Image 1 (spheres, one colour):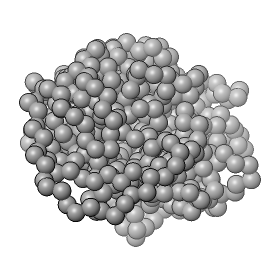
Image 2: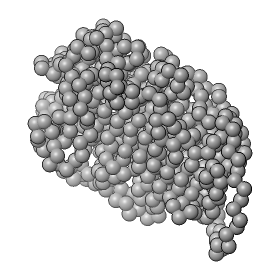
Image 3: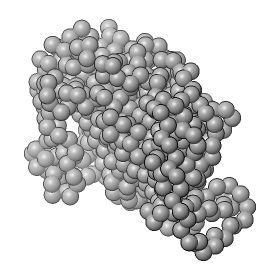
Length: 560
């Protein structure tokens, strides 16, 4: 890494407040360049300057806050470029008429390594006020994205009325449409929780699938690493956040998602997040332990939610809606994988409850793909698709049994009945588990794929899906699946739900409960007045994928 010069920025008082500020009233920001500026002893306090007038709503600010570079007026905003490296404790305030520019790669902190002791590593905290708008600079050839490195945190806590928005320059300039996508990279959180895809030869995981030296590079970044041996690692908070028009494709099979989680731990808090029109996945989770709640995926050109390489976590309340037209041919609503590590540890184990998935593409063989020996449990869901509903794939046979559908050698921890679970040498919970699902499929219910000469037949998929007593309706219809407001339709409402709280870990395990009680299928409660009847409204943006809030924010526009 090039050397950096340190600039100590003195906070200025004013009506808008200073955007970049340290917890002690000063901030050390590094930016590329040679040499060091020695800051002299503080001079006596200067008289308080006349406050900068707050601009009229809808007009650009007159200037940029200290610590940023003025990029001129774009639409109704003044663009203010962030430094390429953010260190220390930094706050970005909401200033009317200001949008913060992400130019190229913006790092929060310097990677501290999987064990937290990497030479030169430096932790940072970036706090983002409600209502802040970020945009990516698309005027040069650099790939624009923000990465929160291992050991650092982002505290992006918007509100229902003031979500934090990450978007493209074109969105700020007012030139996007409902079909725009892939205009910048996205946001990456890199953590020190266990992953299964160690990139160094000779790294041996322990019996639980953990080693501080097991790490890998976030695809598309070249150097940003994730992974470690700290399952409780904390990369910060992402709450009431929109990420729009992201997902840069760097090369064949090398993309950036809307939100990428690499080895983030269960100390990381993620809820109320919308990813809109990513040209790749909405959210992709590479290992780690983070749980997520209240997700809206609209218009992803690839998978809406993708998790692999040893992620072991839970998701509750997921609304995924594809765009009317897609350009990719393997865009699943949900993709579960191990990235060719059929028995690598930690084994992928995801539990998804209260989900609504609306697939519109006819170029993909199924709505949900589960492969690579990965384990998953799907609870209280509604799926509509013109294709098959499920594509269960195995890439290896072990002892004559398919890795993805073979019997278990382990038992997951549960609250009801209270069980701490058991862990065998494979951490394998057996075939995919389905409870209380309404599937509205196309002509075929299951799609078979052959990998390495192995095929999980449609009959085998049917046997593990339509288990008696688990309330799976495989012959549903689109007309009876959902109302226009994405509430359970008459068909879905007729399926007996199961409360997902019983799948929380037993209290004696020391792990916190995550799932909350529900008694319906799908992402949205059908009961007016229930908090989970309106969780997806107000803070999200409307598009031709769905109008969530009458008279609400359009995804092609921005609040000033």
